[in-house]
Length: 232
Image 1 (cartoon, rainbow, N blue to C red):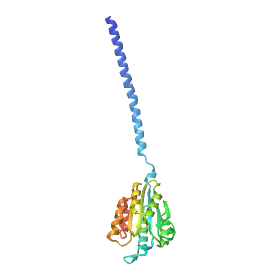
Image 2: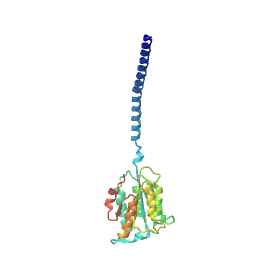
Image 3: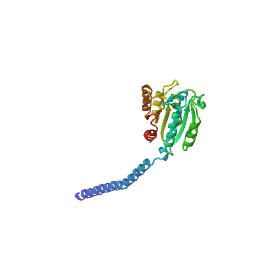
Image 4: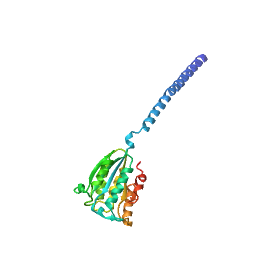
């Protein structure tokens, strides 16, 4: 009787040891597999397509009739052309640049005109366009901000609007509402004031650029614009 009990006990011990051995074997097999999967996932998530490194800038240029006015005995239009030439030449060549204007004869009907669509290698085309235009008409700022947002929102990469204006607005839409919407889309709005720097206009334009997560500049800070904007 005792022999049978001992035999049964030995069999149970053998079964238990076999079960333990099987579990350890499974762990040895699965651990390397999990490590391999984790490594593959990590590599894939760190590889970002080149398209995410693109930088897109749409310049909105005020060509309304008020730009014939003078600051420091110079026409605002000539001052803005000088600023634009500096900006375009300062931009790195890899940046996608476009130009939208309002107030020119081309934009008279719609209040806005996309002179140069956003793409690479547009510097020469923009500089040629700058030399040919003359101020004319009204200045619906919010409308042009909205159009620029449509030009930018489906593009891959960083997105910036650079508004060059004397601050006079003839539109019936509040620019702050449009800039707030653009900001939520990840589009930054920077403003360059070309005109008399009075407290009211300066405060208004500063607040708009702040709302757009962008920078504000005056017409005599042209050398600081591109280095300060932080396009990345």
